[in-house]
Image (cartoon, rainbow, N blue to C red; front, side):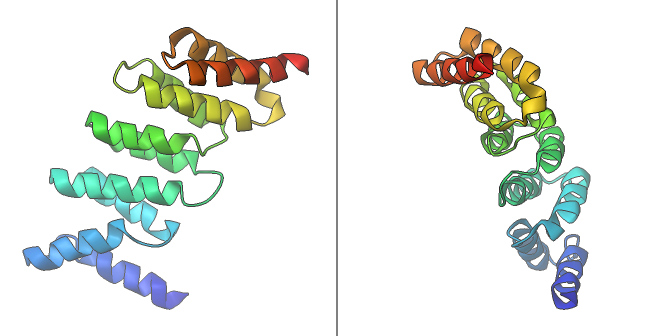
Length: 171
């Protein structure tokens, strides 16, 4: 209701408070907000801040909110990805991508798959997304899964990709 919206505005207004303890509290509150209403504020704050800790808090909050409901919000995760600078932060985004079911999420997972540091998580996310993509996207799913079977080092992920490929080919 409006009470929650007012609370969110109040917290958001304190992100740049002169008092450091008020500022820190506001960042923690916003990054732990219980619903997606905070996402837009977290994105803006995360882009604008020069404080690395705050940037990470914002990113974690966005990723948590994006994955809070099924399917995960691939638009939010895409914005989180553009915010992520450190490998750890990118890994966090990739970890949540598996809950999404859109071609955009698949494209993001494939981008991460090309990075050696992110490949293990990205391979799993790619397979998870490909398992949930709507039927109209079978070609994209097939291409992505074939990519996983080529690059994934973990046999269990390769097998899962191959299994999904068989069900796609059976249609």
